Length: 278
Image (cartoon, rainbow, N blue to C red; front, side):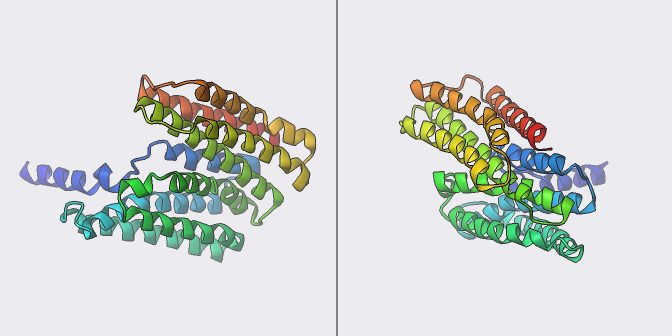
């Protein structure tokens, strides 16, 4: 009985969510929705796609133990968490590297175009983590992270098809815009909830720029203007929502319900893009 209890305590300590799971719960949607869209548009699920998902997930999860380990090094977290955080860093990082090496061996060299900027973003994140939560949750880091996680859309498409195509680039633009404007909207609503003053017009300008950027795909890529216009529909919808949010203060009454609603918006928008592009 004592041995079972000890083992239970050990497992609970090993899988403590503070050491493994990111604190930004909405970032899960930024990761999985783009990946699902990229996979659905490619209409293929194969071993490279599964390996790409595993590599993306382990890289995503590696941020939290890295942050904890850095805080331990700076004397801002429990010293006892240091070895366990380092263990998770090695396990998750090793898995990500192994998956990427297998993908390269399988001829998915086009993924290198995505891996390199992701490494840059990760280094920036680790640097920001040295300054605590304020550095991690700065506007620049949050927007960079949202755009970076959208790379799972082209990554899934490249893994499925084996090449970097115009469709992969279009997918990144669409999902990056979706992630970024969604993050800005959430940031505004959270600021309203806590009574923080913000420049509300910036929210509308960012959403409007996103709509124009999506429309520009009809000019700079081989897709037709009709397709580009259809792709803007969910972005026009969230632009109208941004106009509503910018008009006056709208605090969040129920944070959990708000989070589920935002995830639902991401999913519905992703389904529309799949319908247009698949």
